[in-house]
Image (cartoon, rainbow, N blue to C red; front, top):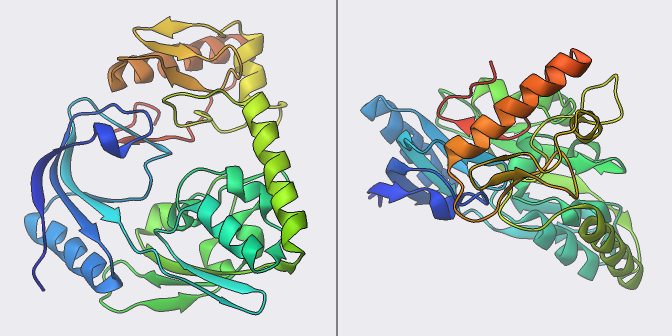
Length: 292
């Protein structure tokens, strides 16, 4: 199998923050076999690798990534009865809309979750009404160190708040199947529109990865802590804490990843001093996170 691996590719177009340096290597995978061979390529080169979907929850360093970025281009979907099976590169909003066209609902709120199915399962993405882990029936993964896919149950993932076992064991999610509710298409589309309107009212637009920090259990939200700490409007370079939602860091123009990281560190310190809470990033910072 001939792999189309490119060198020194800018990361700016691959993340919704539109920041970052260059990747040493970059390739796209449209099948699980290509995914496997690219992972083996990284191991042969003795370099790190990252599976990338829509780049909606990731922040690359200005120094770049010293390994291989594997862009997930696996986008097949199949519907049977009230089950929808999606490869991991399928966009979340697209999945919800396609399901609605087949009178399948129960996940309307997930249309507002940015990113891909694989990324959503990886981080158990969702909204208070529904998380992806609530509706998954099984998935297909390519385990670390194995050359063949394996079917796994929801329990395999050990889903938690914005978390799953996949974050630690390095399996690659290839596809997932979800059990949805039979619901008239018009009703589902109406629900999707309501969730979208609510998102527009509450959440800022622009170059951002959405919520930067996870919500701590003992307080209303990370955004509440940041707002109560007086951090709304705080800036470092072109990175700013949104006036609309305090847990969103926005790239107002030409912010660097360093600007965003330094602003997050500053906010982290202010909240720690005021509430004695160490906020944990929801955004994946690569290759090295300062929050460890």
